[in-house]
Image 1 (cartoon, helix red, strand yellow):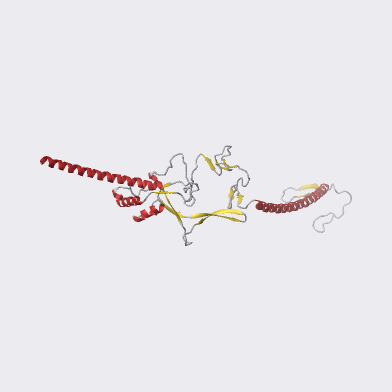
Image 2 (cartoon, rainbow, N blue to C red):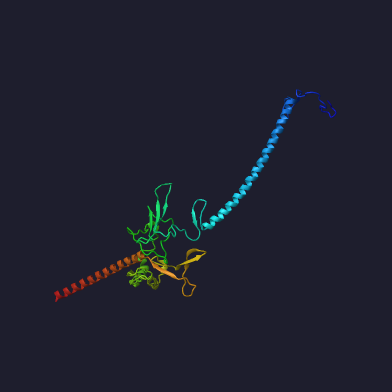
Amino acid sequence: MSTATGTPVFVTVGGDASAATATYTPSGATTSTTIALGDLAASVASNTTAVAAAATSASAAVTTANAASSAATTASSAAATALTTANAAVPSSQILDSSGNLLAKTGAIRLNYNTGTSATTELNFYSSGGTNNDGFLTVLGGSGAADGEMWIGAKQLACYAAFPIGTATFPFSGAVLQSAVQVVSDANDKTIIGTIGTSDFTAETTKLRAAWAAISGVVYTLNFSTNATKRNHIGVIAQTVQAAFTAQGLDPSDYGLWCSTPKTKAVTSTVDGVTTTTEEPVYEADGKTQATQQTVRYEELLSLGIFCERLERSDLAARVTALEAKSTAATATTSTASTTA
């Protein structure tokens, strides 16, 4: 044993030294540990084998990871190719968003399109996973009398925010209802401007009565009617209503019974095989001023007529009463004169 370096080490060992022991204190420990050199050698050999096995496993893991990365790259490329193919097959305007909503940014969504057969197309709406639909839209196709009819089925059709049905340019041709139309008329929803016929509204009443008297009734047919035999209609002309109010110094646009809206037209065009319909302005002959479409609200116009006619009857009744009183007085005077004579 040599101690030249200050630490005793074995220089040569003769025979089996596996039984020899070494005593040491592990780092951080307070008590020493004694281990046989044979056991120490076996532990070292075991650790060496474990390290070699771990290195082999790590190498295999790296190989697997590289293969997985290559497969992911291939899958990403395949997905991109599939998306391109899908976009080419399905119009980009018709996609599902992350919530499963069908979006149609341009063009149209066609159901039962160009099948060459007569069929009924339905859209059924369900909620809460029910098996019975809560509402439906059904379109009847074919050559029968009901061809092109759309049926709406629901407990109630409500409007989330107030908006009109139809426009002045694209009106509905008529409405068939089971009962009369209800109009909001609650006092809490109105601000009273004046009452026709009252003393504090005399000036306005006089003008409104004169405007009503100037509005003539006409019998007419509709130029855009598709019926082979056009039926006669009875009503008024919006321009006549406008002129009657203007003549009395009243602005017809201040009253809801007369309306004027910008006129538009439907324009159909086909681009890249996709047909779309847009709404575009209609201009006057100068090509700059947008034409307008005048309409009237008959329920308000006729309400004005009812109150004006009521005042007319009241005036006539007062005149008749005055004439009768005058006639009675004249008759009494004549009778007295005759008696005196």
